[in-house]
Length: 330
Image 1 (cartoon, rainbow, N blue to C red):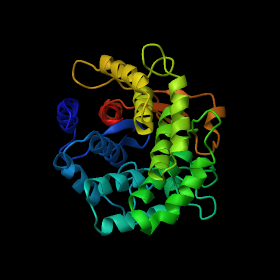
Image 2: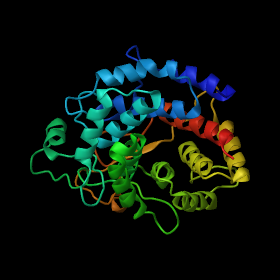
Image 3: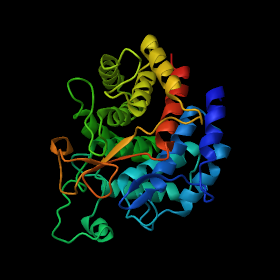
């Protein structure tokens, strides 16, 4: 374990609640629990953190598995494929091999379109309509369609399970690979920038052995780096960490990675965390093309909003994983 991971991992662990789980992103549904907890745990494992530190989180998530085999944003929210895939990846990475995994995989399969291979966030309209207290007349064409980033993480989860779900992983990769843009990036539905969705697609591409797709994404990343080593205007720690992770997966790009690492290290705050820069967007449920939707509200509740990780945990976890992965990369 690197000295950075040895320093940051206990800091992040100390921000868990007594139940072993993290809270992040304030939304109309409340704070996220199951989804950010699995994401933070997965990033710490990728950074090289000790599994023992994360056993309480894994145990708590197992206890919170829904009857349908999945997980939601938190325990009271209906199952979604994004959370289920992230929890599944985390549990597999930590070494869980119980019936919990089989039930979660079966749940993910039910979210995948049999022909396109795309994976929708919500498989059924009624549960999330009821939870959100929306009338039956409200269309959910946006939330209940296949999403690029959700398909990518679901595909990675399928790939982590080996031969048993190789067909589902292959179908997901077909859907994702067909949507890589000419510049090498991938679009996003639930995120304000393409850096995180592109990272999720790159994770799947690497798992499926398609390094050409990874290298094209790395070329897009490299072309957008600013002089100070960061990405986006205004510069974003989150986008920089996602970009550095992509470059680390691609290999090479030493100078570019070094500048990115220096930029991330310089932005770390005095308490050991990084500033809140993850921009999760929540389109109105009927919006299918969020890039064409413009009246976004920031730091508000509801839909049509962009939410930041107010506790700085989501961004910090991605930063420490990116820095550690870059150290290990060739």
